[in-house]
Length: 288
Image (cartoon, rainbow, N blue to C red; front, side, top):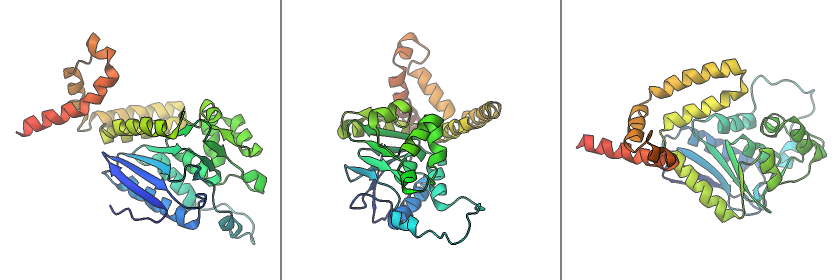
């Protein structure tokens, strides 16, 4: 696919797509950035060459500051508020991050606020840097509310009480607190350490069978359903994964590498990392 953007730079290596945001002076989500994020997320969702998506920023101080206030001021208010018949484009973009059949990860080096925080919160995973990452939902102080999934996404991430504190307090949440609350998966001492760890994690996941990754993500998303329904869905998705082309070769490879032996089980994380290469090697042998 052709990834040609003005506010985004993309690179693909080993199935990992890195999308870097660059919209000076402070990475405000202007109309141009919003439009390109919508287009980019649509493309990566459909691109079979992309296994994992990393969102990062070219600006060490800002991931995405917030949605453009000038755009919000231009929203029509001359008629009464009404229920919309379908989700708006911002909601659709955020849901695309959450539901596309590949992991989405936000690397938050600097500040992220408002619509930028809602974008990041819609990704599957978020990582930050101690002393640098700051999360903010400042909307209520401006007379509005977080309307780009924030009031729905945050309670699911951090709980109702903490979501109230974040949204009503309009104060910065530091990286360590955000990690303790569940907004961030992990925090790192510096951006280099974050890039190294997340890069290795992304490459590891990109090596797994994409069908298994997609079905696992779908099943985890189903945790928002009632438990009985979610378990029924999990059993069905497990059956689907078992019928995928990679399931039998991968499990046989694991056994050949030592799974279910004492030695193999003591190094199961490393063994998992060797499965894909073993499957590929056996496929080449059979081809010859």
